[in-house]
Each structure stands twice: as C-alpha cells, then as structure tokens.
Length: 166
Image (cartoon, rainbow, N blue to C red; front, side, top):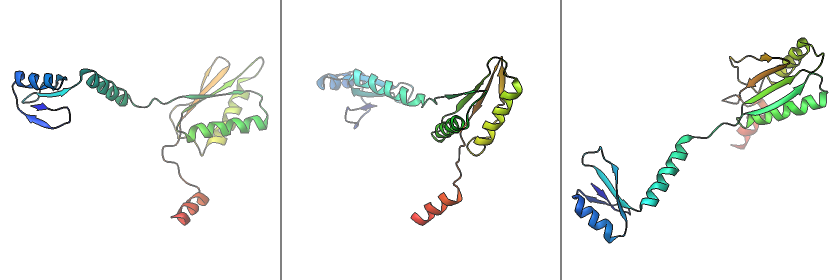
C-alpha cells in the first residue's frame, strides 16, 4: 500500500513501481508500517519524516511537573510568614507541588520547628490535597511536600459570580 506525499492512497503497488514514482517526485519511499498486511509505505522527504517522528516523541513525553520549594526559618515574622504562605498558594494554584523546608539553626529545638509546621498546615488547609506523605526530619531541617487540590471548589461568593455571569 503506497501513500502519496499529499496523503492520497495510490493503492497496492510493487516495490519498483513505488520507487519509480518517488524518484519522479524527487522524494523518498519510506516504509511506515512494515507489519501491516499489505505493508504501508509513504512517499515523502526523509528529513521531513524524521522531523515529524522527533516532534511526536517530544509530545508523547508529556509535560514535566516543576517542583517549587519554600524555605522557612524557625523564627519568622508575621508579615514574612503571610507572604510565604501566599506564594505557596500561588504555586499550588498553578498546579505545582511545593516542598516546604523548615530550617533549624543553633539552639533551636525540634519542638519549635514542629510548631511552625503545624502553623503552616493550618494556613494551607484549604489549598492542599490530603496526602499520605508526612513531614520528615533530617538533622535540623524538616521537609514536607504538599500537592495541589485536583478539583478546586469555588467559595460561595465565586460561585454566585459565575452563576450571575452565565
């Protein structure tokens, strides 16, 4: 089965006839489905074919998800804390997972770090998906990965606005 460069089917041809047609058009004869019955060949440029194959391969890889990271110190002011929470919510709204790192330094007790983590959890309770991943402590640092909610629920005010607009 031979397919022309513009996509029209030329039908079942023998190999020599298909090669002759390809040479007349100054193109190549490329076997695209060797296991099909009868085998399928296309008449087109080899470089164009390779380009299309590479493009398909890149599309099939899919989109990589970028992990964002936010650092907290054990002692943080309210303004800085609120700003970092807003940034985390912004990342989550863009469907990025966020790695939260709480750094302990000097004589900071682990109890203070875990208290800060609880404060962060309370601030993000409506923006994160419940996950099985719990926070982990490594040395003086605590790491916690949060993932965005898959189906974001609208608040009452937002749902009223969308209903009035439709």
